[in-house]
Length: 369
Image (tube, rainbow, N blue to C red; front, side):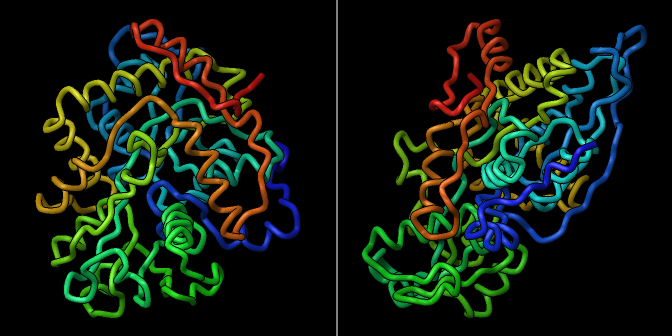
């Protein structure tokens, strides 16, 4: 299998080598893959596209709840018939991209950064974004004893998950709009940006080593449970309150060779999103149950409930916001302007949406032509 890990232009490559730009789950470090098959194949069921199995990748994170719920409820397996739905979970976007490149997974739920990074590094040859999954779920949470207004953020220490990830870029962009100067690499300036893994940010906040954090759920709600205050919801910075946090990707080879499987998985995604929106309490419980199975621990109610409410589940990939996020990274000096032409192929999704009586979604001019 050809190696698609080509490099970006020199100026961008060093940064991207250490960045997990725009990560859906705010990139925790490392990865952990595991394979599960908890739903029995129905007797007499036929294989989809003649395949024995399909490997589906996702993060054990609430922003990937479409995959969590689809797995927990057995929706994928039911749709695939005798083709077994197998699963692999990841803690970092680059690991999932490598798994897609190697054929270890076929389809994955992932954030905009790894999708942009993987597509760009392969010069547009290794993946397509084929659907949306979630929007929102990112907040600026602060210590109310130190920060009482947005202007008070100046001069404070604010954590973001990782150098150049989605939330890091969003915070740098917001800080620039306030007229503050911050060096994107060191994080030093009118406000200090502290790059902190989401797993340790609550402890850093509790210890007083940071004054706040621009983070995704459920980290934001964990900080609130510790006495933090939501100073800003990133939704308020986007038109209509919508911005991409999770997409669905597939390798171009798999899309070309197994369109029926891709259609089946996308139909499950659309149906699952509808089920989630129609049955939020049942869906929340199912997602948390699968999260406990994948991550070893369920979220407590005081974290789960507010985190769940802040995430919107949508089939629309919100392509225009993907382009805007890339522009913010370029503006911050963390990324050379990428060519994203052809990153989307929404033809199968729109076929599924049409069959369900829903309106088509758009690729903002970045789709396959």
